[in-house]
Image (cartoon, rainbow, N blue to C red; front, side, top):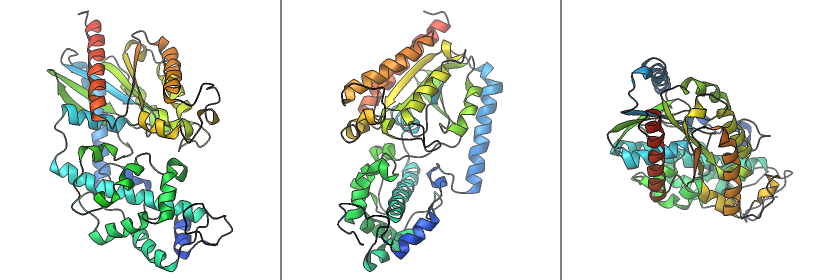
Length: 392
């Protein structure tokens, strides 16, 4: 039984079209998860990233003693995967770094195109799983997209390929699935790009700061970013949030640490973890935060929590009742009420922190908001450092 209206999905008894059978059998559709990694498509780039990670390890373990806390401040960005840590770093680059160069924008153009194609293929996988049937003309369009292969960062897709992706996105059933968002296995920010696909899927496309902030990548290696802010060098160390990466965090909990930024997606209340499908993402974040506070060093450090993706929370709360996912929550389905509930939980857990914790409701893609938040964070960290040095 075909379904071309886009209003509902067919049952599993429907024979999927031949191109979707191929997709369903392959699953990854020639797009392994590695395409999400920043500049790591080639083995040489992966090796370079690993070497850089080892260099940072060495600096932190052997050279940290030389850091003068009156001139250098080291902060860790921690939190579960897909919470928005990298987006916070991008904001720092905009506000306190050199922004994004022409080469950066060329790279992000390709990354955004890859990001869109990966999510379109995720939609096709979901349709294949549901036995959706396309007509012969649509199958020809699908074939053009399915055949696309991952590219090196220096390469880009030809105009003909991008036009083929546009045609697929414009199919009603694809737009219907896109509206399902995370239910269809899509990344949080894909809606932004698909609404802008006519502008974005172009060989001459030059990403704006807003486009770059919306582009998601998975952190796989440790990275350090330095920014000079008010005559001090701030070292931000970003580590991966996946479960199998967290055991590496403790290596950076030393006396040279000025503070910790813990990023949690409040919009993840209705999602399960990719690594552990039975665990609610928000519950995992709460447990993770509590475990961090059991570390003796972190109890003595400034702790800042970003309740991130507040904009996405407002959208999801209209479709997904909170109590269906967080049974302990008994208040109304209202963003402010839910954020107050979450903040109280984190404040209670943060009572173990001798310096105390500071929380912020954030949308990491909002430049104006993040400028205010980062200024507040800076002042909080500097106050904690001054107390450690005996200045206050």
